[in-house]
Length: 254
Image (cartoon, rainbow, N blue to C red):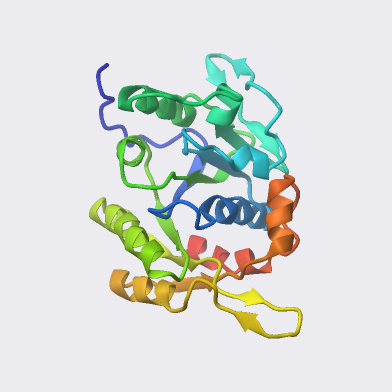
């Protein structure tokens, strides 16, 4: 199967495309992506999420649309599935309940379809921001999106622990080498509040700041471990507190 040629043509009626990567799984990147989308909707923006984690899609579960089924097709374009006002496309919609046991060329084809064969916006209702939730690593999926998506900027999510920062630095290098503006670092699971008013740092401290200094970008947020947020995402509900994610919005306006 022939690899797709580079295509950085704008997506019709999409104003801005922002990638969110981590390099490592398990750091809460999809949760950050979902909550950032909620914050943008609360800010009056039209928002979409391309769930590019073909092998482990989780965005539909977080938006409460995991059981909706396959998207409708009109005029040879798929219509995104809406959850909490957020337009979404994911392998969980295209092949519900099935494992994507695919080699690189099949993954590439699926990604191009989800990116460029979806009616993300219309003339009457253009999309302000399309967020791309990237999978862990820096492989075929990432290279395909760098070739096919005119990405305007990127965030990198990490936890404070050194093993996460090592992989997050690779994600940051990927964006920088591709000349994609790195908007900043988001440190997740920074602290755990205790019932007695104290707190713990279960994954250590300082990793996000260290990565931000290496990449010469700001550390935009240090997000806590939050059981209420975890429960909301598992159940596909609205996040209980959008304030930490609303603090990220100025980086998108810059």
